[in-house]
Image (cartoon, rainbow, N blue to C red; front, side, top):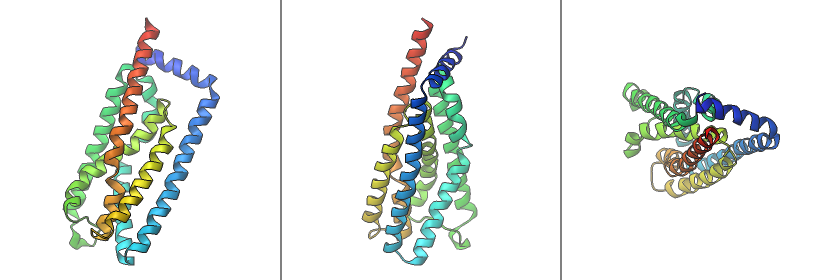
Length: 224
């Protein structure tokens, strides 16, 4: 029998006999959603007090557009990857990396097409300066940021997700305050929203990759 099948069966049994773990995961992910909602409210409250109504509208439209593109581009992996990752066995790390790559390429391509097809003169929101050229990379990375949280939950590390989101939200808010008087307000808001993920993606994926390797090792021991 394939390692993934055998280990997946064991994971299913463990989950069935450990309802407290399932409950803990649910509470952690629910808390994460509450944290992000509250942090988003705080971010936009500060933004609203720091920029004009027109800039606020452009910033919210631009960030919403980036999140929309990233959400579509993650190809439903946020929902499907957690279902298959625990049963992937030795293929788990490769599956995770291929998922990241596929979603990032789709998102980056979509941003480039948007920027080429809908120039600033069209009235649609646009980034300016260096961040315009970084946008395909940042939105591509946002898909990774979105996918990694359910992936962490799938391998039993969901309790890190609320902690990650608390720190990310604080960094995002601090960056907004620091940049709002230095950059164009719209660019400052977009930079504050997306740039911090560059720090969090490597940190969380060190944990995630380590956990996948640990699961592989445990699966091999089970076959011994």
